[in-house]
Length: 188
Image 1: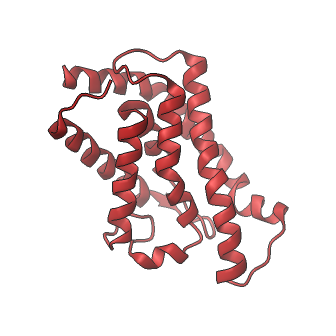
Image 2: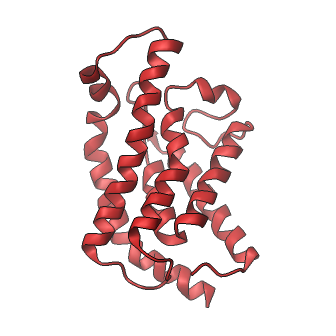
């Protein structure tokens, strides 16, 4: 259960935002959507901080980027709302919440079973695509004037990212329980 220690939660949120920023800056251009490590940290935030604090940390990250701090892969600022990638960013708080919720109760330090953990990580990743792909489609169609079919959209914003996302899910799978233990030992 999340403790009411505000200082501790503030520090965890700040660290999560710092890792998210670093994950955004480690990127490989891949068309309108770059390959980055952001979704790894989205998944880990839900697993280690729990659904509420993980989603709050992602909300802070989004807010900092939208007010102009260069925390996103291509900078920051309110103009990012018109970016083809903003839908993926918009999904981060919900994806963190879903991942944390699907992982189970907020009992830090407890190991999550392999099946439950895998399902939670895949669910969080699915949320990123379920929000991000429609935004990408709408942006390309109405902002950039490029009409795409469903197949082209999937080839542009989904298929190339699957191998990397599977690697990030695998990394999160092996990092999740040790990170939960570390958060638990610091909360005691």
